[in-house]
Image: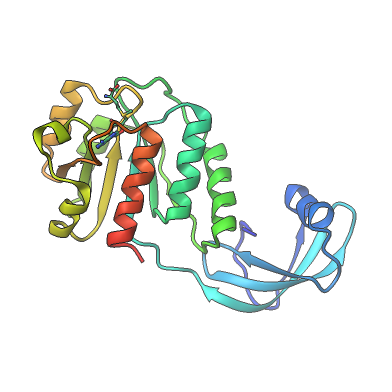
Length: 236
Ligand code: SAM
């Protein structure tokens, strides 16, 4: 369970709201029951239920189970798509281990707003489910031109381009054998990037255009596939 405050051995936490409802009414935890908590700062702790009300529960931290993990240095930059599909994309990105998630506003965006709270909630649930001890950083929605302008030096920008395959472009897994180090993948919206965007991305010094295969993948499939390929090659 994620707790949005710094944790320490010996501390007692009184939990209310949805989390208390989950622990008291869904999990039906009795006094003495163990609960794993993480704070995205120091790590994951073993706690026990030391008091239980109808709408609140008190947990006392016994020991540190794991220090906060070192997250592989991979960013996923993806244009927002329709709500349920973007939630799915964010959930899988978290499970697969991305360090940073950057929603990118592009010319063909059908969705031009992102609810940060909703995205964070989805990522927290995914982190709890897959036992991450560090949450991905969620960047604010950023225009593509601003993203390119402020791109950090030394970070490869793998540009997932579905048109590349026709030109016998390099596959993402091949590209990774040549470009190690901090990386990000950039995925377009349902309608893809415009020609002008495509040219702007390609002319960026950090850009490495890559193919994810001969089929045109849905944006969320492309994001998940690219993240899985990177994690399988370089993540740990
Ligand atoms: N331009 C497209 C169209 O409407 O025919 C499709 C865009 S695709 C649904 C969304 C994004 O997924 C693309 O912008 C690209 O970043 C990525 N993508 C999909 N298939 C890909 C592939 N085979 N190789 C590389 N990237 C791919």
